[in-house]
Amino acid sequence: MLYKFKSKVTGDLIMLEPNGRRVLQIIGKDLNGADASKGIVLPEQMSAAVAALQAAVAKEEAERQAASARALAEGKEAPKYEAPGLRQRTLPFIDMLRRCEPAGEPVTWGV
View 1 (cartoon, rainbow, N blue to C red):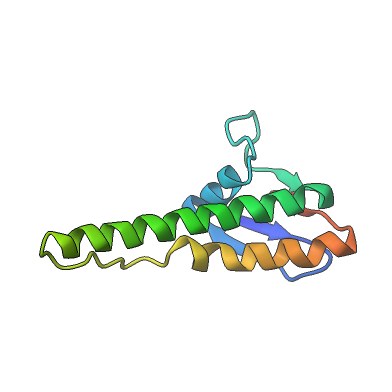
View 2 (cartoon, helix red, strand yellow):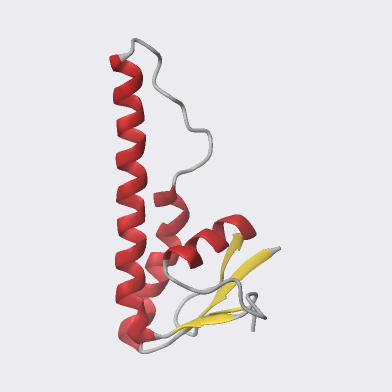
C-alpha cells in the first residue's frame, strides 16, 4: 500500500506504507480506527505535527550517535545504516506542512 498525501498548495507526496504509517503515528494520528487509510491534517495541527516530527528525528539521530559511541568504546566498528534515516523520510512531509499551514490548507490522504 502507498500513502498519497495531497494538498492544494503543494504537489502530491507519495510514501510507502511503512514510512507513511510511521510519520502518521509520530504526529498522533490514530491508524487503528475503522478506516485508517483516510485522514486529514488541519492547518491548526501542523505546527504540533512539525514539532513532533523534528523531535522524533532528533531522538533517532541521538540513538544512532549513542550506538556508534558504544561500538567505538567497545572497540567495534560503528553500525552502518543502509536505509535512509527518519530525517530523509520526513523532510518532504515537513516541507508540505510548513507550506500548507500559512495558506490555511489541509493535507489529506486516502480521499
